[in-house]
Structures are given as C-alpha cells and as structure tokens.
Length: 192
Ligand SMILES: [Zn+2]
Figure: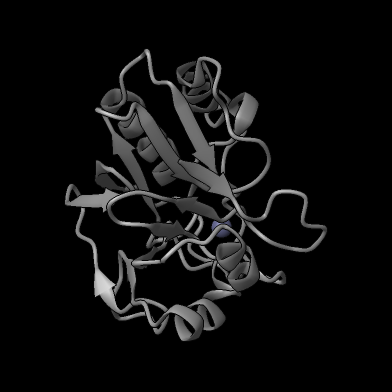
C-alpha cells in the first residue's frame, strides 16, 4: 500500500509516500504540513525514512517525523546532516513488502536516488522524471542537464517497458504506461 501523505496539501511541499508493509517506510517527508498526524491517522508504525534527495521541500518535515517515531533516515550521502545511513548506488533497499534497487541519478541534485522494484513493478522517480515527460529542474545548485539526461537514460534502461507505477516528487503519480513518461522525459530533456 503506497499513500501520498501530501495529497491535497496546499503548501510548498514535495510528495511524501508512505509505503506500508513488512518495513513501513516514508519516502521523502515533504514539508510545511503535519506528516506525523497523517501517519498516525493511518495507524502506521513507521520503521524508516528514505530520501530521494535532500532539497528542503522533501525534508522539511524530517525532524518532526524522526522525533515522533524514533526512526532513522537513509539517503545517498551520509555526510549530509539529514542522512543517518548511506544507501550506495545499486544497493537493495526494502520498502514496504518489496525489494528496490537504489539508482544514483544526479543531475537535479548530487545525492539524488531513484528506487525501482522489478517484482512490484514500481519506480520512485523523485525529482528526476514527472508526469507527461516533465523532468527535474537543473538551474539550482548542483543541477547539471547532461548528467540529468544520463540519469534518465539509466532509469529508462533499467525499468521494464511494462512498468506499472511511477511515484514522482511533485504532481500526480503515473499508473498508466509510465514507461512512456520516462521515454518522453528522456527526449524532452535533450531539447534546449
Ligand atoms: Zn528537488
């Protein structure tokens, strides 16, 4: 069961996905809304926080969630204050009931990770790829368009073309042929 806790929130926030199962994980915490209350409202016992990257809109609620549930965080770069435990490129990470492969995918931000589960046929794309072939902005610090294109290509090559679901950092997630959105993003990012 994957739930976007930020759904309907009118504030500057990323999406925040509660992945319930054997290991209940919050993928990004969002910011400027009561994530703790929303997790409690679902009667969920949180086991961990996993971050796609550490932009403020993805980690604003981090401390309150850590304090409320006594959990640690996982992310690519454990030198960052938000990250307690490192996830290496290509490492396996348990989210809910499934194993995901972490894909280091810089270009939007240096510590950016995507998470892909072949068995669940689910991709967490963070701020790399969005609905309708939109892609992460590269005009912020650590942004790099060529790197972003490489990262999108890498994800496209890794996921199955029958991918079932793509959960993204902003806007609606995609449950109808998300591979098409990945391909569109790979093409759109090359147009300047
Ligand atoms: Zn971002």
